[in-house]
Length: 445
Image (cartoon, rainbow, N blue to C red; front, side, top):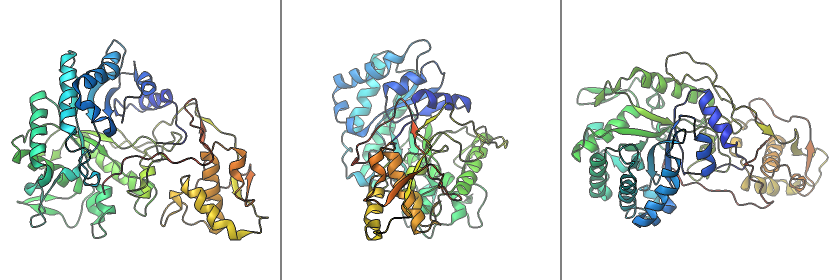
């Protein structure tokens, strides 16, 4: 969800250069699939929520499988492992929009895969938010976990279907959101390096919320009669901007602890000594993503918008931290920025122009405690003007702002606040001057 996207081939090379062998994408875009062909990278493709109703028709499901799965099933094709049917379709914030159509779509896709003769190798699953299960407020421990009352019967049917077809339960777990959504949440409990106040459950001490959340799901599966169902963590990560707790240092701490734990194959108290399959979220920052859940939504990437690594990370978890390999051959727009004109006199219009720029470009780094919060008023105005200028592919008229702005070839970045120059690529999306930002589904906090 970006105004300017890295070419799919560049992304595929970035994955390969960092030894990443599995990737989860949120659609089945042909350019992405073509770039992944022949790489040997195992892929989870997806059917967006807005297509679930259509997939309730079996013929439509068969056509989708034919177009997006079987066409890539050849030597040196795309190694598709899973089809994600929807994305967090049971979020409470969706008000049951997808409640009655997700399971029929899931069944149709798996049956279409089976009919195509590839159902043994490719499984349909549903990435679900961790809000589909919980523990009662009267006993908030993992062993008391159960599926949410309003969808309990539906979840029982879905997990039975997963079990019958050898498919995993896919869940998205976000310790950052536990911290973000609760001012009383103990910050150390979001990480993996110990806490002075563990949650004790039947003699078992939980020292981090990831383990506690995962085992709450295990308990829910046990109550449904499928306690041994495989679990895939479809998303877990930590943003690096857009909130006081979203920064590079905390992200590095989180990923360092997580990857070390995964490499140790220690599992969780209810599933000990288990190798977990986990997808890190996400690969690159997305400057056009909806900020409805929070400004951090645009900063989940392990890499910046242009494929530069943000911090040292060891994907193997063996403690050999180093900077990941960045994207190669990235092409940029010309080296110029849009800044507040120091000669401007009619500053009464400044606030309105800054608000306009930030309505149609990404100014999330300007928030309290964020990477550009320390800028003075002039610096923040320049940041906003440049964000809009770059989003508009440096269109000359986009650096006017009623005479308040000017183009400069001098880098106006300050300290930790980077004034970006956008990438130019074959997939570049050139936007009109009054574009409406692309929106992504809201993430539950």
